Image (tube, rainbow, N blue to C red):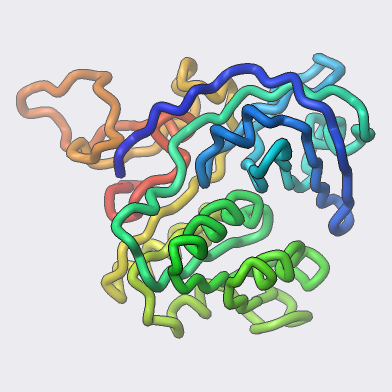
Length: 274
């Protein structure tokens, strides 16, 4: 995967809409024309809570069109709770777009997108881009229970085939969403975003069926711009995403640590050594 260099900066946005999609799941719509114009599928922002009393938090860019960019997130702590309580007309500063997103080159024709829980927040943009390119896109979407399968209809309306899975059997397949991936073997590319156990299972299935997979890793970022090296993952040194630091030495390891916020968050599954 080739790294990209998109212009990132602080955007002073205005909240233009707020919806609670499920208990503890919020969609914020922002007036952010420059962010919407520059965001690539799979990139994220660091959102700065208005009070300034807590650090910025990383959120995937859900939508990006015209003047609107939106952020979909689960309320999991103080920072996301403060963001979830914002009202229309309030200012929200975000830094972005950040990171390397999904590589959609190569004209894939049949793509499976696997989303687990809040991972749905990072896969609408790649789904839309693939459908515009006339690819056949199947969304495999899993959550703990039916009420947390938010926005599934949005993907269906965009042109995706949608298959659902829940841990408790309240909607769709009763079991893990990766079970659906194992049964669906007619794809030439897999994209995935969700919790680490799900991503590891996607990588395993992709290897078994011989399909390349790109995984968007979830992590708590301290800085979000690669300065602190606090969010690293081991990858092969030959990867195009391998950082140049530390420099290669004779007899050194063939594995290096890449920053999820800077070289990622999306990596080819076969290049990860986690």
